[in-house]
Image (cartoon, rainbow, N blue to C red):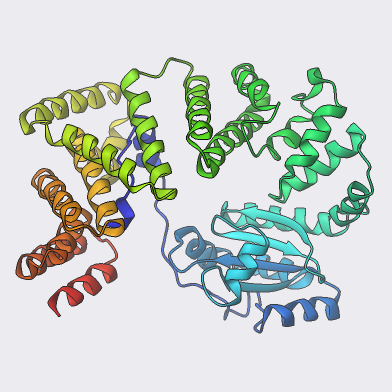
Amino acid sequence: MKALLRPFAIRLSLLLAFVFATGLTRANVPANDDPVGIKFFTGSWKDVLAEAKKQNKPVFVDIYTTWCGPCKLMAKQAFPDAKVGEKFNANFISYQIDAEKGEGIDVARKYAVTAYPTSLYVSASGELIHRAVGYGGIKGFLDEADKAISAANDPNPLSAMEKQYEGGKRDAEFLRTYLTKRAKLGMPNAEALDAFLTAAPQAEWLSKENIDAVTGNLTTAKSPAFEPLLNEIKSMRLDPSRMKSVQAAMQAVSQAVGRDERQAKTEAELDQAIANSLKLRTALSGKAVSAADQKTAANDSRMNFYLRTKNVPKYREMATAIGNELLAVSPDSLKAKDAASYQKFMDQTKMVPDSMKATENFKRYAEMMKTIETQQVAGKLNSLAWTYFEKMSDAKDIQQALVWSTRMVSLDRKAAFLDTHAQLLGKVGRKAEAVAVEQEALEKAKETGEETGDYEKTLAALKK
């Protein structure tokens, strides 16, 4: 199933973070009919900008998707709130738009929206004033509105600085301010960052005054700032007052490496991206990455590269080798690894309070940890099998994918895995088996509270 294309890479820290996290409440999107909350403008994008000009107010734009949990939570909690309504109705023309439908697609692309919810604050002329990603509760939502109000009244807005930059202004102080403003808006300028690194002494690149400008505009590990930033992260971690900067720096270097990998056009560029990824992992973890983990990460990167560049022979060669390795892992050895991983999990959570261990989240993850190694192997097989289902057309390739999916569901009959297996069975003409397996997938999804729409559509298609 598409949702589980990537191999499992579950780490204990991530598990515990999720265990302690609060679940999101679902709500309907958009929630714009409550008179005490935000009053949303209805009409086209052109219309809302015209209304903003008429009222001399900036526009608050809620960019959401129908599947986004935090979007729904924000719509339920913040939009109907009286204090929120009072502030937003007085200071903004408010507007909602689905990033995946109609004009929303172009609006999201124009403002480089890649996460949801994203709150944009734009002028009547469409210039971006402020951006906030995610939802941090009503207080956080109001705080971002205050920042937007302040930005709207800035006597030296980004639009003015753009003209100065285009006019050739390149002194370090100007560039720092210019880059910091672009960073806050999520609009990095790699060229301007290079200019700043040339204008400012290297010893000052990562000072407290400059760090936001650098991290917010780093777009590639090829930047002269990449290596110094990696090294600076180590010392920054020791200073509690710089924790926010540490998080921004870690995000910046991670995104830069990821972007380089996704944009690699040659194997040489890919090799450099893989090498930088290893540097990144070593720097962030503070210890050497095992040879096995290095191999797994490099393989994933190369296979994604071959898929993206449509190099089917090399992709098939790697996929076959990895698939054969996974098939060679015996169920008994997996059981032994499961037991060892589960014991390690229990040892590392001995200090967790009993009250936390009694929560449903902890119980669920403790139960999952009993078969974590088996699940990871099944997940990797699912990634291979589903990619073959989607990308390959040769009958031999589909038969190979069916071999992988057969082993996969023998290890873990998760709804998503059953769905992959059913669709492969359908593709080779084994319709009766496919229907039965997809029916099981649907029932599993219902049991675990998953969305069932895709399963129902697939089942209907297989029955035709």
